[in-house]
Length: 374
Image (cartoon, rainbow, N blue to C red; front, side):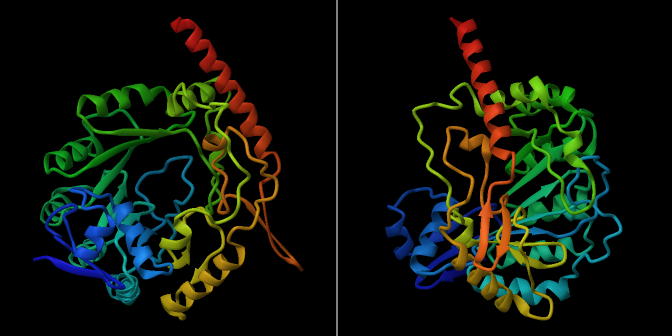
């Protein structure tokens, strides 16, 4: 049965029995150029335009801090956490976000499949016409989860691999999901401990036609784990980043202007929920607003006031450079300094120097590679 969704005067229908099957009304069809296929991002752009105001169309939810793995570089794991949401407790919050136009939700953790009410929460989202992506380590994808995903397919499942045991459940789960016709993305967080496994995991994904991404960036989170001490550095980091960005990295003809705050699309259409059900723009944003006791509307109102106050403010310390892709600086990753004159948004001390040094080494490595090819 199709589920009708609407934002302002624009409507569309969703088939929950498929990963992503949308039927657009004439308004949206005309706005999107009568294309045979449109991306979810294009749909959300059109919905924001029709609404004429920010809406929570995309949700990233860290459902729990608990995890059945013990990775030494985890930024969120806390197995003492006992605040996993129950379906009944979180239902009013989800109902409200959906009523405001939620298009896509990403369920993560910790390990989101540890939440005993994950099946009920997932089913509710899907049957409400929300497109759902799952971030998981894959180890808990058993027959019950596969049956649920077969009945109500997720938009995609992103599995982070941590070893090269290709007979283990995460790898078998990836193949089972792919055989169900579900889009699977294989991911790998590179650390000093597992860097030697990267090539074999990447080859396995290529062999099984599973798209693959790796990331050598580690950062400290809220659980006291010194993740950054596990990061790859030196020449190994240079090589990894050249692989990530390709030999076209750092084209000096590209002009990057100084950054201004909250210019991302997330500022107008995304929300993040922490395991404690605190609201923010994204997981990286340190400023959060409690929904407990206040409800979603009040937390969202306060967040919007904060966004409007700081939107388009210059990020101090950024003069613009050719290393923007490597830099990845934004409001969420900056230092927020309160003063009598308001909030200052600043690039952390030493950040630009570190990025520029790595960027120059990468360009040197790329010049060497191009020379070898000649």
